[in-house]
Length: 249
Image (cartoon, rainbow, N blue to C red; front, side):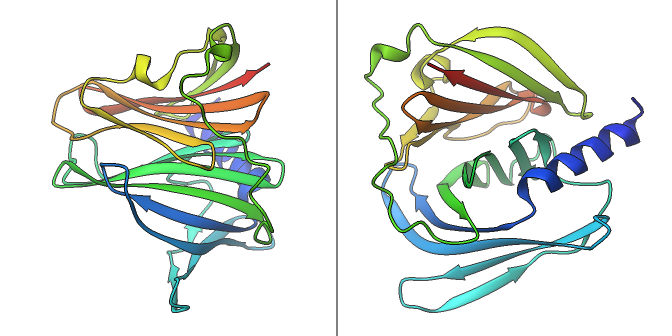
């Protein structure tokens, strides 16, 4: 496939899984794991009838009932900022090796739900972590069915998953079965790990420096028998690939 064909495939995957109205709750955490704020958010992707362009709008509704809408510029086929493999995606802002202002997000769709998480860095230091749990077209009336993450649960030790990855130049690759490892086992010493009540967890470096290797990983415990994991990998501070794994019981 040519580079343009890879771009078109990436674009079409985005349209298939994510061009909808997504209603959710955004929760921002400090690096220490304390909640900074939480608010409602509707992320809308308005697409043209021919599927050749779209506009994203984020509508925020805060606890004091004040609201604001953030509109992003028109995106035209086949260029997108994010990488998409089936129901999973990942993107970042900021140039390779320049972490003065850097933000990344990894997310997944499962049926009528999406879960995303990421981190925001200012002057190379982690400013906050955000967790977003979304529902297709309307807010969920309840969250009681969401499984809770138990990082001490050993039942995952013998689980294996199927991995799919995408390189920085949009080439998709597959790997054989991957054995489950906890976030603690795959994280570097300076990483901060956060487990949220929504079943979403993340590991992210507390600070970023030039010319280093690191990765950023997000887990979503979708239900007791299904767990999704996404990671972004950087080599010498340059993005190299994203990998997504589905673990089933």
